[in-house]
Structure formats: C-alpha cells, structure tokens
Length: 446
Image (cartoon, rainbow, N blue to C red; front, side, top):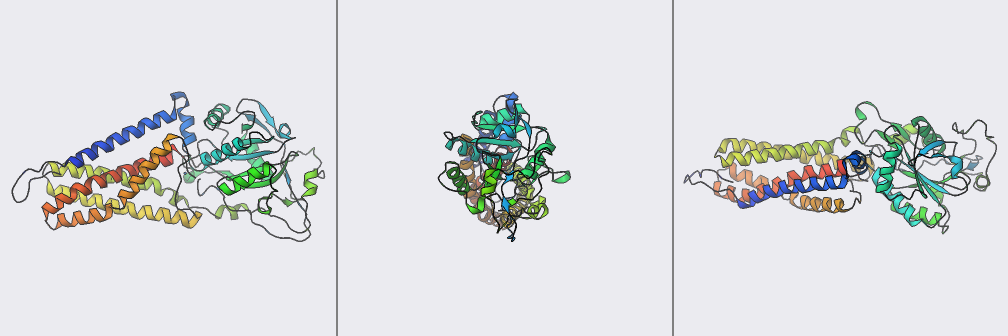
C-alpha cells in the first residue's frame, strides 16, 4: 500500500505483491469466463448446455431416504404395474409402455435446467448404461419439465452424456401425464414449486431414485442414484449376479389402487413376476407425501444463503479495492473506515457461511456440495477451491492483527503485515464469488 508516512512524510510505493495479486485475480476472472464460454459451446446451444451444467440436489427437493416400512399381517405384496403412457422421445418418436415390454429397463427423472443433483444423477445413469452396454437392458430418462424440455433440448442434453439412442431414451410429453405416471405407477414425489420458493434451477421437486422395471412391465426395484453403493448393486442385479436386496425391492399391497392404469385393463390380471414376489407377511407402505416432504428437507431460507454469501464476498472485494485506492491517495481516515467496513462484511460472511453448512448438515446429513465431473472445468474448480480454502483459513488471523496494528498507530508494522494480508484477503473474496458462480450456476452438485 502507499501513503504519506506519518513520521517522515515519505511516499511509500505500492507493494508489487499486491499489484500482481490484483492483476492475477483479474486474469483469473477472464480465464474462468473463457472456460465458461468454451464449455457452453455455440450460441445456439448456450442456454440448453448451460442449464444442463447448472445443475446444487436441491436438498429441499429430493427425497433421499428409504421408503418407510410398516409390517402388516395378512396383506399380500406385489410389484406395481407401470400404467399406460405415451411420451415423445428426443428423436420425435412416440414411445409407449408397450414398446418397452419384453426386456428390463430402468427409469429416472430430471429436468435440464436443474441447479442441484440432476447432472450428477444423469452422470450415474450414463455410467450405468456404459457398464451395461452389452446387456439386453434399456434406460429411460423422463423430464418433469416438459414445457421447457422439448425433444430438441433433450437431444442436446443426451449428447452431453453420450447417450446411445438405441439403449437410452429421453422422454417428454404432457406434464400432467408425466406427473401421474411418476406418482401413481412409481409412487415417487414430483411437484412444481410455486411462489417465492420457485427459484431458478429449483422449479421442481422430484425423487433421486432410479426405478427398475422387469420385462413384464412391473416395477420391481428402486435405488438411489446419489449412492454409489446402490448403483453397483443395481448393475450386479441387471447382470444377473445377485438378487434384488430386500431393502431395494419395490413391493406394495396388491390391492393398492393405480389410477393411471387403463380402465380397459382387467385389474385382476397379474403377471408371472407379480405372483412370484407376492408375500403374506409384510408390506411396504409408501411414505405419505407430506411426511416424506418434511424428511431430509432444507428450508428455503437456508438454500438462499449461498447467494447471500457470494454477495457478501463481492462487497468485501469492492471495499478492499476502494480501501487500497484510498490509502494510495493518502486518505488514511477514509481508508480506515473502508477497511473496517470490509472486515465487518467478511465477519457477516463467515457467520452466514457457517450457518449454511451447519444447517445443510442438520437437515440433509451432508454439509457441502460436490462439483460434478464436467470435464476440465471440474479441475479448474477444484484448483480454485483448494487455494481458496487454504488462504481463507489465514484471513481472520491476519486481518485482525493488521487492523489492530493500524488502530494502535503502529504504521510501519501495519504496512508490512498489510502487504501480506491484503492480497490474500482480496484473493479469497474474489475466488469466493467465482466458486459460487461455478458451483451453482455453471455446474451442479450432488
């Protein structure tokens, strides 16, 4: 920093470290911006691909817990039949449930503008489909946002995940038909959020499960896409190397109504698979929607804290640059007030940051978001994140000591330490904003 020395009036030249740090941060922002542009591709595909990669789970939107199990005597269990449906594949072809009969298939639910777990879930489906490429199994992904997820957009989305059109279908259609299918046939949660809770990338709440359907069109299993262990189990089940574990079986009371089943179909008809899995001792009762909504749900105010944290980091960054400019102009009093304000903003950020991660762990069992594997961009993100974390741990101690020395009038020691504190503090504030943008608006977490 520079100012007129209080004792000698000597002009102090700006620190080369600070000047280079400011330049480095600006170049870092430019580099990240270029990577974003390269990652999102041509302008015609920009929106679709950006929304593909902008997928935070909506922690408050995904039910990750196992189905609630209630034992009841004398009630027969059975797999659930997939109701009739007619949806449009990304190729424009109409796909019905009858087209999928004759071979087992797996289905999951996403929307391309999801800002949470959808990209990570789709990546899990991609890995599963690649691992099972030689098996006679099909994979299906159904969008819960058919208004925006047109066949063209789903085609772009599928290309990103290298989806073989002969093995992996992406379906869209009428929203009500899709919602009825998910709720009534698969007994999974799906809803469109309204009002203040409708944030970009969080417009829909849906399950993180992938459902296993046998060759007769019966839902026989369910697995968490977010759990690598369960995905390995599903792969081994599809390969015929193990039976469906008891905790992954999808069994419901055989007399549980399915409003989506065609009225022309005889409800008394049961497939051979249904008869084999019938039991007289126990039943799995699906969780009541309100009960499941409340479980593993983070409140809206908590999910807004990352944006607030980014704003606070941005404010601290601006204040630091203003303070640096003021001391170079020799305006020590204004510099002091500005830097104290920057410190207060950083303290507010720290409080908000700790509240968010503590609350996230309290409500969901996980305290952080993971950046999905989106090529080289993930390596850039991790490089920035690691340097940010290491230097962020130093800022509270360095800033407190530097401010203390300044308030006590120990200018020489203050300036010496400030030449170390300022560039670190500036870097942490700038990268805090970059990390937020990359994690919550460019890529998704799980």
